[in-house]
Image (cartoon, rainbow, N blue to C red; front, side):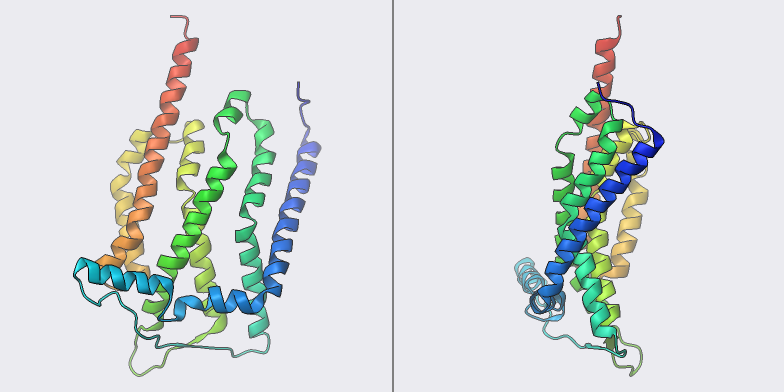
Length: 271
């Protein structure tokens, strides 16, 4: 039988888990810091080149669907500049830290789960088996979606947005923050099914409740897609569909949780 932990024991366990997370992020950040040229040329600056993989794929998709070259990107009309002494170095540090967090996410999520797990009952822990793998897969799918879909669309729209004769000369740090925030946010948004799973197990959400907010979710996602993408329907649909799909998966996950809970209650009921 596991010994019940006191308040100080929980604090010590939290400190230990945070230390492991920090070590993992630090190690991967150092690796990415050393691989500076490869990280910036192959990953960070790639979405602003016309031959970026996503741009070529969109162009082929547009031609295949008969809408012509509307999705093709032939040139990038904005340039990146650095206006401070520490600009390049600060961007290097920012990219290394965020990249370290992304790469080490499975380890980070594992430490969070190990801290939460002792507080669960045996059947609850068993039902959540594989949560680290599932959560990590969702996160990396979101990161890839943010990097290959949302980030380049946003960069093209915002970088080429004209206002009179003002030339678009984007500060390097602003570019980095845009790419990093979009990519990281997309990874976290893709955790929606997992979040709904735990909320459903806690009884905080139900499939009926989620279905009642489906229309609100649709409007919110379409508005978000309209803001971060160029003003054409195809781009907005490309961004909105995966998020709505994840929400529908969350509804199915919640329904499964409720069904299993009801089945368990019926087995316990002496009637």
